[in-house]
Length: 213
Image (cartoon, rainbow, N blue to C red; front, side, top):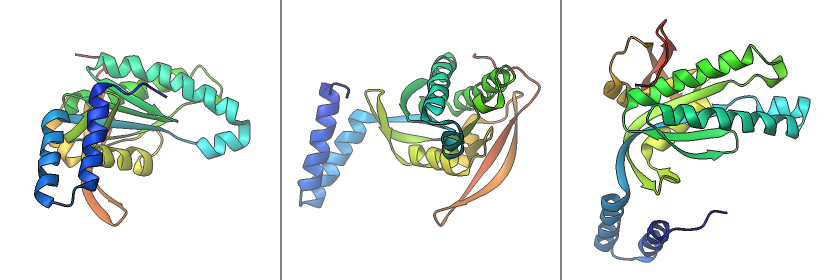
């Protein structure tokens, strides 16, 4: 368990006050204060390592944990190399944020490229493939150790629930911010999950190399 810093304690105390405050106006002021202090506009990347149940059932938990460890060691420098912050790992999921959606897409392409290359050197049972989801918007960022907001939720849905192994799915909001790029092709997609309809894109790498700016 990590030590709670002053900012995190303030955040938690504000949430507690909000939950106990009967006056709607005061709740609105608490919320406004949280957004003023912790709010940031970021692109969010959520990468999910596929195959937990099948791999664990077939090869055991130690086998899978070793793959998770290798994924984490590989992902962090790639995220940082594209100007991102590795916010957290949650089991076999990677959560990161970037100042711009373009950086998040490039990082996702680089992650897939890195694992595709590594998979050629390992037996099939050790292959790592990620499903990636990307969205952008204003979120609450807690000391670069956690984040909350619609962009985090949507990126999680895209990466964990919708993306196939090796697939990168991007919301229309993030794609509008990123624009066109010679390093990728964007294919329009319609997504449906939990009764919600989204417009977005599937990203494929072009022949251009995925290198940090």
